[in-house]
Image (cartoon, rainbow, N blue to C red; front, side, top):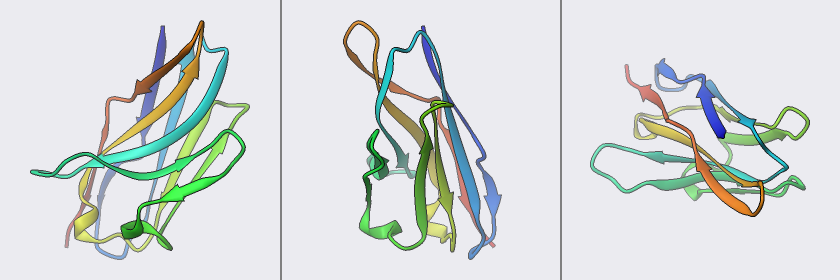
Length: 118
């Protein structure tokens, strides 16, 4: 059994910051790429940021320069530092990871709400 558990969501005013964390646990042989997605009300889920096991990162244009993704391979964790938050960043944020057990599997966290409002 493998679980991805997110933490760090909440409510913040525009211009504020939040840091999301996601921990992978369970029967894991290897963790591959990890990422953060979000789904805003009435919109499709979109990729926010991703990071390979080697540390190569990719960001959605809407968050470039404001969000930073990082990971700790030893702890099997991925983080998303979100600065200069805007109301349009309001969404449920989901952690995603490719995990090798007997083969590669794609796992998702349960989601954490981020609300940016004055």
